[in-house]
Image (cartoon, rainbow, N blue to C red; front, side, top):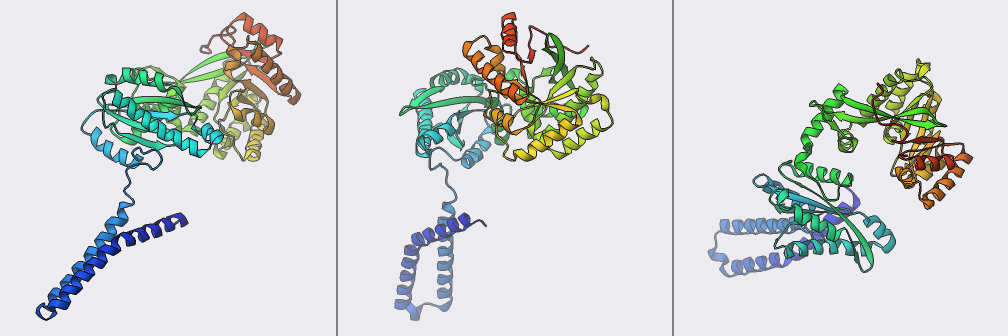
Length: 465
C-alpha cells in the first residue's frame, strides 16, 4: 500500500472514531445505568445479548461512517458529478433509454495553469460547470447530469437521440467556443454522440475522444458514419487480410520526380475507402500499430518494383514504431539481402511530445540510415518538438508543416521559410514542402531554394499504374 493510501485510511479511521464515539458512549451509559438499577432482575443471557448487540451496532456504525468517505458523488473542485458515479448511473439508464452524451474540453487548460496558476485553472473548471448548467436551465432542461471526467473534460447526458439536440448543441458551440473569465481566455470544444451506437459508457467516451481528436468541433451526421464496433472489425480484418488502398503523389527536385509519397486508406469489404483520420486511432488503441507499419513497409517495397530505380517511395511511420526493437529487427532483416532497396525508402515521422530518451532514439534512427533508409522529420514549424528533433537527431531531410505550402505567398511565411532554409542548409539537411497547387506557389518555392516540392499543381494523387 502506498504511503498516501495509509495516511488516508488512518485519517478516515480517526474521523469515524470522532463521529461514532459519542454514540458509543451514550449507548454504554444507557446500558450500564439499566444494569445497575435492575441487575438482580435481569437474566445473564440478556446481558450477554445486550453487549453483543451493542458491539455489533458500534462496529456497523463505524463501518458506515468509514465507507461514507469512499462514496463521494461530486468532484470537490468542479462540484460536478464524479466520473465513477456518472458512469455507474448512466450505464443503467442507457440500457433502457436512448441518451445523447456531450463531451466538452478546455483545450487550453494546460496553458492556463502554466500562465495563471492552478488556482485560476480550478476557477475556470468551476466556471465551465456553472455555465453548462445555466445554459441548459435557460433552455428549459433541468437537473441535467454533468460530470467531470479528467483534465479539462466534462460529460453531459441529455435524454433522447442526438438529432433532437443537434441545433441546441451547434448554438452552444458557437456561444462557448471562445470566451473569457477575468480576462483569461477559454477555448472550449465539444463532441456529441448517442447511445444508439454504444451500450457501454467506456466505449462511448472513447468514441467522443476520437471525434475531438479529429478536430470535429460541431459534429456532422453520425448516422452517415461507420459505427465504432464496425470500424474496429474492419480494422482488424484489414490488417489480417492487408486490405488497404494505396495512392501516390510525386515530389520533385529541379523539375524531375525523385520520390513518391504513399497515401494509405482502409478498404472495407464493400469497397468503401476509409481515411486514416478515422481508422488510425483504432489501430493504435487495439495495439496494431507496429503490425500496421510493417504492412505499409512491405507494400512500399512491392511498389518499388513498378517505378524507376532512381526514384524513392516515402511512407509515414510512427515514432513509437521506429523505437520498437522488433520493428527495427524486422526492417534490418528485409534489407540485409536486398541491396536494391538501399536509398529507395524514406521513413517520414513526427511526434507531438518530445521523447526524452533522445540519445537512444537517435541511435535507432542511425541503424535505419545504415541499412539504407532515408529519415525525414515531418511538420517542421507545426509541432514544438520538431525543432528539438532537428537539433538532437541525425536525419536526412525535413518536411515543412502543410500550412507553409498553402500560405507560401504570404510575406511573413516566406520570411520564416527563408530563415528555416538557411538553418537547414547549414545543417546539411534537405528541405521538402507540399501543398503546392499553383504556378505562383511553385515559383515562390523555387526562389526560396526549397529542395523538394510536392502538390497537385505538379502531380495528382493516383495509383502507380
